[in-house]
Amino acid sequence: MYFNFLHSESIEDMGYSLSKLEVETDLFDGSSSNHGVAGSVRHDRPSNYLDHEISQLTKLRSGPHENISRILTGKKEVPVSTFKMLAAREANISGRGRFSKADCCHVLSKYLPVHGPWIVDQMETRAYVSQFSADGSLFIAAFQGSHIRIYDVERGWKVHKNILAKSLRWTVTDTSLSPDQRHLVYATMSPVVHIVDVGSAATESVANITEIHDGLLLSADLDDSFGIFSVKFSTEGREVVAGSSDDAIYVYDLEANKLSLRISAHNSDVNSVCFADESGHLIYSGSDDNLCKVWDRRCFRAKEKPAGVLMGHLEGVTFLDSRGDGRYFISNSKDQSIKLWDIRKMSSHAARNIWFRNYEWDYRWMDYPPQARNVKHPYDQSISTYKGHSVLRTLIRCYFSPEYSTGQRYVYTGSHDACVYIYDLVSGEQVAKLQHHRSTIRDCSWHPNYPMLVSSSWDGAVVKWEFPGTGEAPLPPKKKQIRRRHFF
Image 1 (cartoon, rainbow, N blue to C red):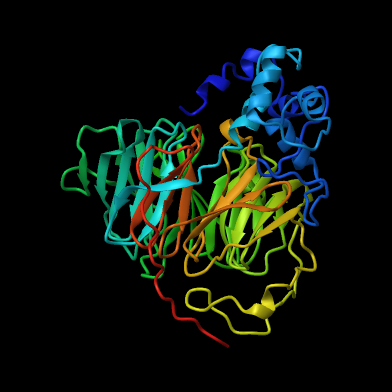
Image 2: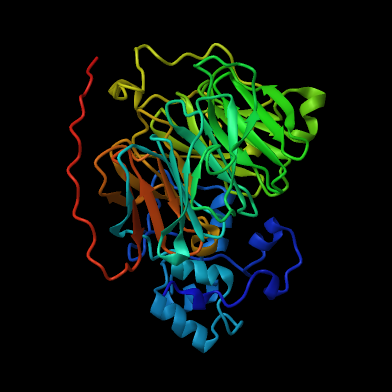
């Protein structure tokens, strides 16, 4: 159903015993086709076309073999249709007799999850978190009304675990599933992060009534204003890293059951933290001080300084997502943009005395000032910028599309205008806009293997978008809520 027949071998099956980067760069003998939207041919590159090493890596991950592209189309820059890809495989034009991983991605990445949507759940309170597990078998949704629901995707989205959060302040701000998918941590506007046994037999998990929700104390600060905005399991599942409202990064050792590290990381709220790659040595952080920072855990205690700083955003950073290679990541920001970063461009410190505002603005209740939209950072270190979505009212999240099915060819994000936006990583163009919800979409998640995307909104709805779809009639579009606009 989801073109699983295309992936008949893994990288290991192809006989490579190289590093991840070497695998990416040696997948082909030559270059590959470009990454426009399926069916749209562009011979002239747009002004924001990404001319950088990552564009070549993306092509190598998600483009057909150059022999297929050149022989079947006569032009290397033209996407190859699925029918021609299958014909080329039968004719063994690539000389391999089968599809490579990149050939598979080239086919699958054309089938964007834009059909639907179909309802997954409808709650009475705002949805703040929605995430697939690493293997796509589970889906987690967290709501303002204390509920966290874990759905079994492979059993018709049946509720696997219905969690009622403990010590809720305002909302569940973030969740993270352990690598073995046995435990879930959830954070709220509180110094305590709680951990739940996902693998237990009980479906209903009410904190300290039907099940124990162990508390991990990150800070002795019991002030009502303290909160955890971001929480992540380490890659081996032994530690939890968190970003907080007291400008700090916390690392909690689960085996020792104690806080192992606190870093005064930024000059404002740390809204997002994530690991750079599977090694767990590098951590990225983003803050309301407009900066992204890179931290090397091997140097935490010795230096207590970041490995580097990346400047470019004009307003606070709301979320970070790593490409997983220890080199590239993206960030969403209140300056209404997503930026792509290469950590090799980072500085040892941030430039001082930079002030861009000549206006009063608060993203929690005001629209973004028109005069600010064209302002550029004089020391912008990002390598690409994506605009069109709206980052207002809440810490809206953005992600790379899955490596397995798209070669991370796209970036996607929720938006305050109740839509999901999908951008082409290389061209910067908006390739899809999913419209259904009637309020802010804070989070959304693309299935790691299938052409399926789930969006959750402040209207309480959790819906799924697919290609080609389930055969059922999709939901009718909702009327958007009327928002008060603020002029200044």
